[in-house]
Length: 314
Ligand SMILES: NC(=O)c1ccc[n+]([C@@H]2O[C@H](COP(=O)([O-])OP(=O)(O)OC[C@H]3O[C@@H](n4cnc5c(N)ncnc54)[C@H](OP(=O)(O)O)[C@@H]3O)[C@@H](O)[C@H]2O)c1
Image 1 (tube, rainbow, N blue to C red):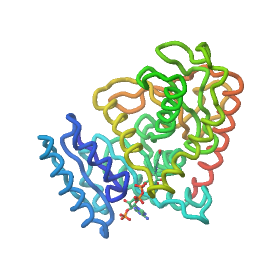
Image 2 (cartoon, protein in one colour):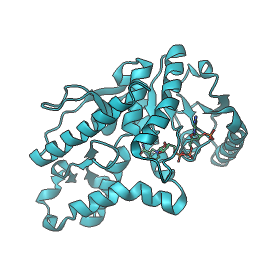
Image 3 (spheres, protein in one colour):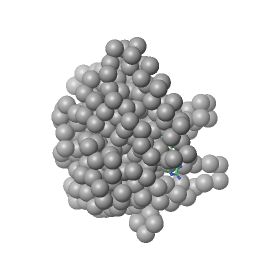
Image 4 (cartoon, rainbow, N blue to C red):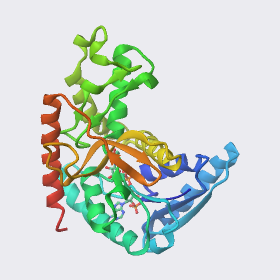
């Protein structure tokens, strides 16, 4: 498999490139950044080759400027992690508008030259996934975002800790925005196939505390170590692996929602359970939610539709 990482000079892009290079199914990785950061990419490449030598792995790593997208067309997938970070005075919408310009340029260039898949990581990820879909004109199965996959993993950790079980036994997901309006689906969370709501001590499960803690998780990491990298990069590798092996797992990614969920007006990219395979997103899984979860999800889609609309003309 050949993968391109645009934004490989950044925290997540470089960590992701390192983790991907260790995966057996990866043959080539293209590290892409702006001209000014190509030296940085040289350092990333040398460092990864050292790590590969230590682990007895072989993969080819190439460096490209972001002005030569036409040389990336053998990629099975192009992952975009480029983007400004929100500074103190910036609203979420300001960030969306700033990053939409970057994503527009890359998506148009990719679609002009290549037939591939686009995997969006840059924030606000649902809005940037939408922008990439619109500007590339690709089929929606081939443009998707990290969405609430990482938030869902954090939810799983919280459930495993509360019920004192191994995380592998927990199945749980968060839907909606990767942001303030996200909705953890407690009604379908299960441990070893048993709904958590049927387990002893469920009545003490601190749902809202956990929700608030997940909402602020990224911000707290930013404050402590100036940005997360291991978590997002590992979450991205999960998804790439699933596609490489055509695993058809159901993961919660950001995808363009139309009318797949009854009563919900889509027209936005949003984190929903999807079946993930070799071609990208095979299908959206319209799971049943409790009424209150459904209403919260509907609100989250409304929020995202507004954001998506506001970057349409950029
Ligand atoms: N979806 C999720 O769950 C999730 C989780 C965490 C983070 N994120 C997002 O992932 C993105 C990357 O985070 P990070 O921590 O890796 O950030 P970072 O270390 O600041 O790296 C940012 C990257 O974007 C590039 N970049 C910045 N401005 C650019 C521009 N105007 N045009 C082209 N490229 C530009 C930088 O390139 P240079 O080296 O050339 O400056 C660098 O490669 C952010 O948007 C962040 O919010 C998403």
